[in-house]
Length: 217
Image (tube, rainbow, N blue to C red; front, top):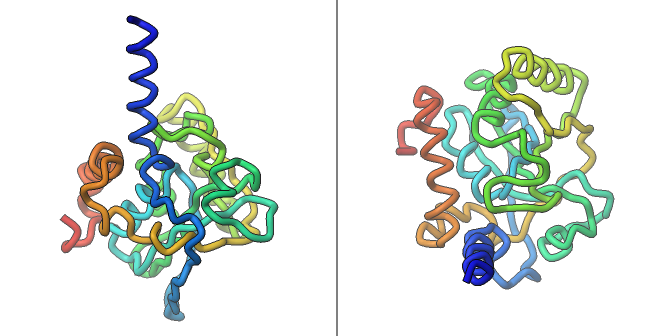
């Protein structure tokens, strides 16, 4: 009986994972086009399933667009099927296009650490695997310094007992398949979205109401 309960528990957790809920059409090509204004900058973060992360950053004032994709791997191309297999070493990543005159990179770092658990190695909630790791992909010395300084601050102040977040140079970003974009907004009744993504977003909103767009209630 205990074995049966354990098996059922594992199956239930898997059904609530980002991988299980994903659209089965992994071969769909990304058809995302986005022209960022000259006033915008882009930052790259990985903190678990990009459905959750995309929704969180899109809720922020000063953020114009968030695109889900893959970064951190060695393969020249990435797609959902190969990434979740672990063969490419990519992480599910979001590209955050933001206006630095409205929201700073330092504030994005604060949001990043406040909206996920950086103490868990290659895991966020029910999602497990290196493609769900916590990572900051910096593009210059300033971003690297700010990220490492903020991590040191969090550890010194004992906000977290440890931080597994990788701070690594940005190399490439591969846009994820079209069905992954705006997934939470387009699939509000998806079991994973209802049980994992929306609660994660709402928990963040309660912590930082001043950073939330007025139309993102």
